[in-house]
Amino acid sequence: MDAPRFLPAQKWGCLSWKHLKGLSDENVVSELKANVYMQYLCDISLKEAAKFMNPSSLTRFRKQIGSKGIKLIEEEVLKTLKKARVIVDDVW
Image 1 (cartoon, rainbow, N blue to C red):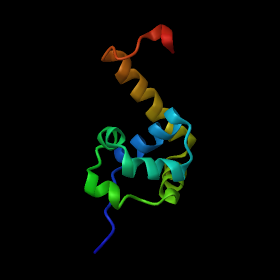
Image 2 (image 1 turned 60 degrees about the horizontal axis):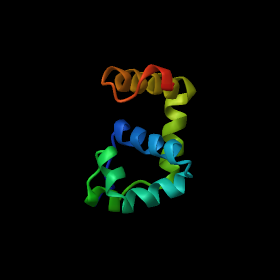
Image 3 (image 1 turned 135 degrees about the vertical axis):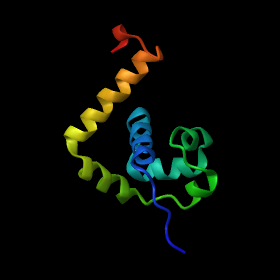
Image 4 (image 1 turned 120 degrees about the vertical axis):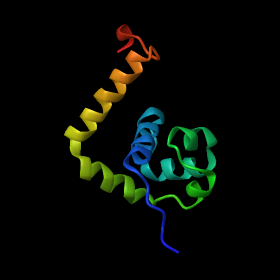
């Protein structure tokens, strides 16, 4: 059986969780397998989480999108959160 493919948005969710919690790639993958809140954030089912990527997948994803890609995604997420009034301008 082939390993499941994970969408960039799912990987981005994992990277966001990593930075939010200050975790290593290894700890992100371990936490994803045990934390239903993180699974929900990353739109990954319990079944998918059990087969989730290894930590090096997150490293490769960061290299693929590069620092400019990460910055662009961060800006878009921040803009969306502000528009939805999840956060306010003076906090950031």
